[in-house]
Length: 112
Image (cartoon, rainbow, N blue to C red; front, side, top):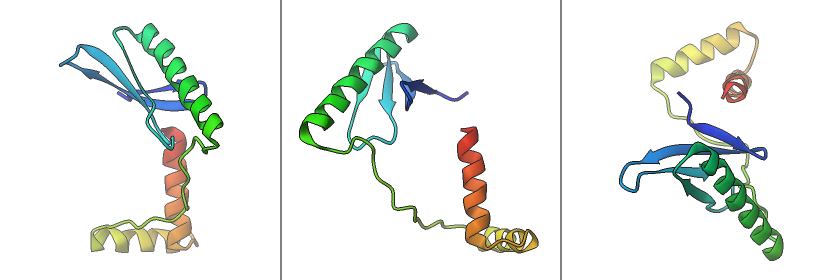
């Protein structure tokens, strides 16, 4: 089960906090915190919209980019056997290892 919801084009992960008996939502990919709480799913969406609006308004007022920026580069640590298997799979598909990994990540990200 995926606990990710979409609020106005922004993804948020949702969990239940048994200590306070509330659902907690936290937006993903933002440059700051914009979390929200509610006791029902409908209210969670309402609180999420409010939290997002407040966060985006604050960013506008302060001239801050609301979305986290990414360089497009990161290191991946794999078992040597997995690295070898990926390199072979890439070569078998006439792709560089970087192209093969980027394609696999793009496919998985679209599903998810």
